[in-house]
Image (cartoon, rainbow, N blue to C red; front, side, top):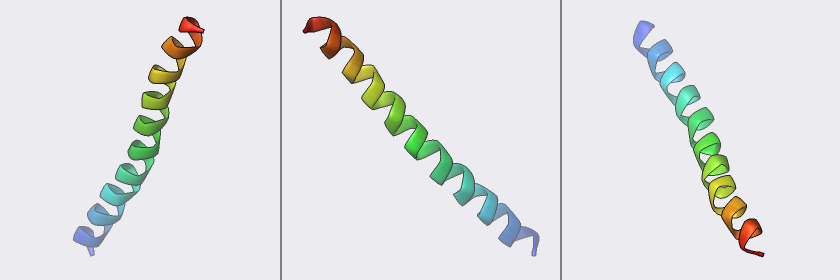
Length: 37
């Protein structure tokens, strides 16, 4: 039961962190391109 909770928390953090990293990566690439324009 504890292992299932750990796995659920792990996947919850993974699916929360991945979109956040993708968002900041797009933000990091979009800001210099907007300054170049």
